Length: 110
Length: 117
Image 1 (tube, rainbow over the protein chains, first blue to last red):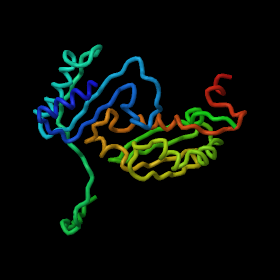
Image 2 (tube, rainbow over the protein chains, first blue to last red):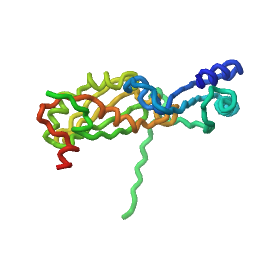
Image 3 (cartoon, chains in turn yellow, blue):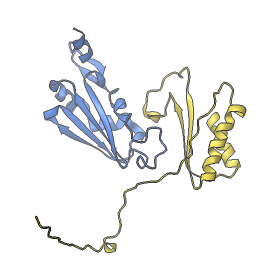
Image 4 (cartoon, rainbow over the protein chains, first blue to last red):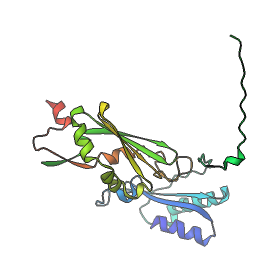
């Protein structure tokens, strides 16, 4: 419910989120549906993560999670938040025509 | 025959290369390698990991060290630098492997009970 509140409010506020992820730490945050289905743990932690176009939108996500402390479901504890810039290192292919190989041989004296 | 968890027979480690997760499974006892080879198959591993792995799984055999290495493609939501996962490297993936059930003879004694004697 807490996660639904956050995501619904972000939609209402017009935040464009490139990607979102909701986990329940203690339930499915590591293995998703591949883990065993079992009875609910005695305690759990909801985690909402999002990738946004701008720092301002990322701060909106953090603010909404923070607001759950006062306005969210009962019996919740306060949130931890982290906003940071993501720098992706992603492999790709480029057309070979864009590459002009040059070979330079240097002889180094002993 | 009885069914026990793979963690009684082997340990496992996982690593990442871009969007590829690789998980090594190493028998505690070299004599258990055949058991691993027969039962920890690509089909079973794919089923065990479900939607955590979107691409192909390839198994490599290292009999001289009693190990198997599973290379899983499209497994890490694009890779550690862009993933939103709590465990973006997938280091916890090895633990999941060890919950796989394997069939052993009724008189098989798992490692932890052997060490206790």
